[in-house]
Length: 302
Ligand SMILES: [Zn+2]
Ligand SMILES: [Zn+2]
Image (cartoon, rainbow, N blue to C red; front, top):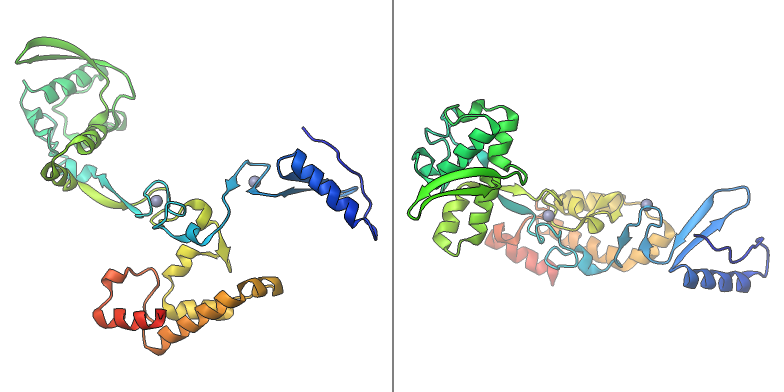
């Protein structure tokens, strides 16, 4: 819904009326304003950092928006760590020429599948029965749909599991969550540090799929200076960063806004180059610096 608040032609002396109209609009429309230019295109304005077309809303940009140690700036998926530990199928099924019945699954809790009386075997037997595959096929030879059922689960479809345990024979309707989902659940739920470590030996460290290892939320990564976001700039070596800063072209207004911080950055970069640390990059974790390097950097920050 749109409300027409005023019609104006631009001329000397209408500033007061225009200001009043704009204020009225912003109050009425929650900070959104559209100017319908006669014979031209509509121009949208927003008081907040939001786009009226796609509904994206960005919080006010502050220094903490650019810190992955701060929940305000950190990627919500990996909480600013940048990587995740994920189960790796190649570690869980190390030999894909083996069948499940032969013990293809090496992960904890699943080695018992080789035993025809085990509960884990009963689940996979039920899966095989319901979906029409068998457990004697080498794991690597399953067609993709069967592989996905075993690895990712049935997506909620229940299968009838027949199992004889200590308490007698029972039939259970189970929606198998897949090897991956099952291992993730066990890993999450175990209280034992030793067991956790055992599971972790079947995991790989992979970059966070949301931030790609850049550790910041996407709104922060969308902020650029000279077409580069803070993650890209941090990856430059000091010498390349100095070059980038020297070649940065800014409008007069931008120069004025950034004057102090640019001066500060240039002087610190100059210092790092002078003390011979120009091969480092800002993204390099301080823990990996040699003692001498760390000391020279501490001097530059003082
Ligand atoms: Zn938009
Ligand atoms: Zn992330």
